[in-house]
Amino acid sequence: MRTTLVKLQADLENCTDLKPLDHEEYPHDYGFKFICNKCRYEHPKEIIINRFDRIAVQLKSQIKRTANFFTYCKDCHNEIFIIITLAEPVTAESKDTEDEDNFIPIIEVHSHGCRIKEFILEDQFQCTSSAGNIIEGVDLRANDWSEFDEEGNIPVTITNAKFQLEELPGNGQVTTL
Image 1: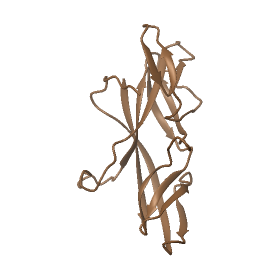
Image 2 (image 1 turned 45 degrees about the vertical axis):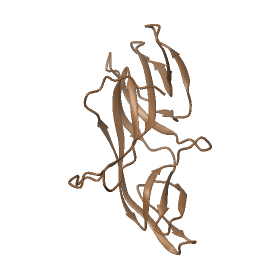
Image 3 (image 1 turned 135 degrees about the horizontal axis):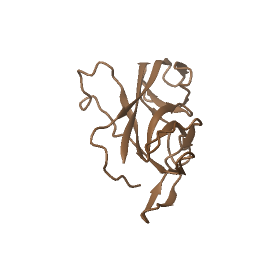
């Protein structure tokens, strides 16, 4: 099983705790493109996955799994499944201060039979204004977003939003839901 981190970097003004708006009442839709590990076929269409959809999977090896997404490669019929989990929260104490890129992990994508090629932003985020108000409906598809926090009487701005994929070393551990 291969683990890939989806990481976010953005310039935040008057806000903190930028993260996907992702709970059972409003599951976040994560978009990806992937490559088959077996035949290296690049699947042309994006897939949309949310971490609350659970699929019981019976693999050819007779092993039963639960995943968020399952398919067969259209070219070689290799089994492909993906499990999404939230990344561990990063605090000021745990963040590497020498990390100049300042990318924060938001989700972990555990994939079997494929390699994640691209993350496609599909859904909304939330942040906390410096006045302490949670603001939902943050749309980062244009890489910039701004709104006025009326309760806190301050403008809230997010600019230069970028996403990055990072494949973790030591892949091979089995992840379960």
